[in-house]
Image (cartoon, rainbow, N blue to C red; front, top):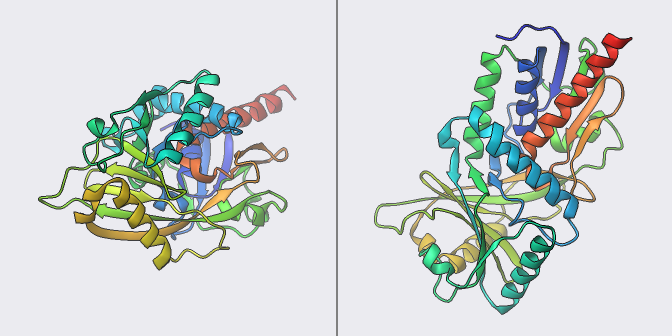
Length: 342
């Protein structure tokens, strides 16, 4: 176990961001505790896609840069600290269902190329993924992208935190309840503004489905498959026992109940892209609240001498976890250097 030489750190939030920050802090010598709720949050219902290319869009150049840097950290550092089985796919395939979608794909591919991050176009998408509907030919692939089992990653991080003597604590309603800590990291997603008023984080609802493979069905796809159907985005993410389908996105306060309309649209769109999914077992419908910011960029950094924030990751919490960890670790290290110098 690392010696606790840095002081006491309170991390508020037990999702992928909070746990990843806590693990790194414990390794760096902080006596760390995590304030978390027992209720599942956004990390529990995430797709687990690490996909800066295939989620990119013109106008989001800064988010693309952050995502690519964090994907590099996933490959070079983060994956090596997790069980190998958390990875469920090692490539993404973005496909066009109709001519309008094909035009959108060309726009995104040209933009990525202009940013210096070209993807590989294809006119034989169905040869790559036979589960695709007949007639789907156009697409592009991003071969460095990954998908991870979100729940397995969270479980692994929690287990590693326990081995590093990270303590669990109940949620807090104010920072005053962490007065005994030398430093605090606010990493509780949509609840961050309750602790630091003015943080521009709002909840955006997203529904996801889990479909389980059954004997006699077509096999689970090997890649993440993304498409736009009737203007709606849909993704199909492999899991060892089936697929995750997502995700709706709309503003609806803090409502986390899956709706009939949302589930219907996801099933319709997924089966339009991969008709064979209609034979899978319907295993789960769930909804979570993404912590979104006005410009879709995360809020990661220092708020005052004692308080840091790691929130507002939107749909990219898993992707940006390694980058966030490095930023927070550098801030904590910088604070220690300043303290020693004084």
